[in-house]
Image (tube, rainbow, N blue to C red):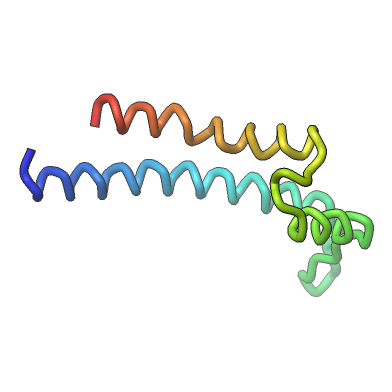
Length: 91
């Protein structure tokens, strides 16, 4: 495989993974919007307890998360894993 083919395959892999990332992001945004209250002017107000939970999770390394939180992160990785396997085995 020459350098151009490798570059083409890597670019295609980035696009496939970026599509998964966009789906993941859109799912998270939909979750956040559903958790919040939409004001008449279009602003979204998030509940203080949710914000506090997310702040705690942001400040906590993976190893310090609870089992349910770790499982949630693992679930997100699973969305990528099959595509990564395909990239490594099929190109």
